[in-house]
Amino acid sequence: QVQLVESGGGLVQAGGSLRLSCAASGRTFSNYVMGWFRQAPGKEREFVATIRWSGGRTYSADSVKGRFTISRDNAKNTVYLQMNSLKPEDTAVYYCAARASPYYSGNYHSYDYWGQGTQVTVSS
Image 1 (cartoon, rainbow, N blue to C red):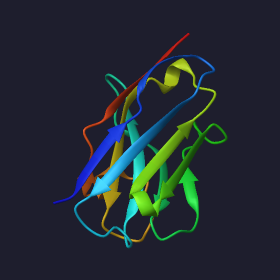
Image 2: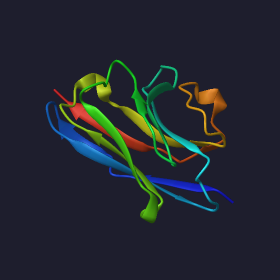
Image 3: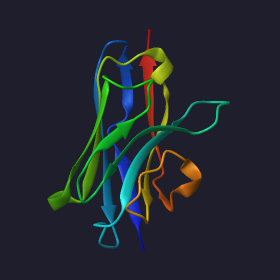
Image 4: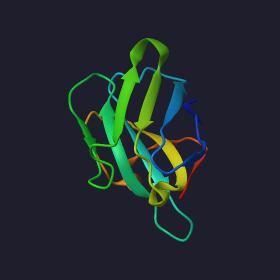
């Protein structure tokens, strides 16, 4: 059974940084793609960044490019989202997701497993 557990959310002032972690367990993820998504109140869930467990490129949304970095630690089965220069509009629940495919996707419908989410609040 796949489990994704996020941590690292919290309250931060604009311009600050947070690092989110997603600990994955339950199977071998070598052929999986991992993604971070976020959902603000009253808005649809939106793509933030994606990475392949086996390596290769990473992709991120234009709204976070240059500020957020997705990375992975295969030995720890953990994916990270380093968030710098945070803005109030980054406030949302952040979700980690796993896609049982080696192909990247920014479409949340194409992901198979989800974590419970972690709240990020950026104050102005």
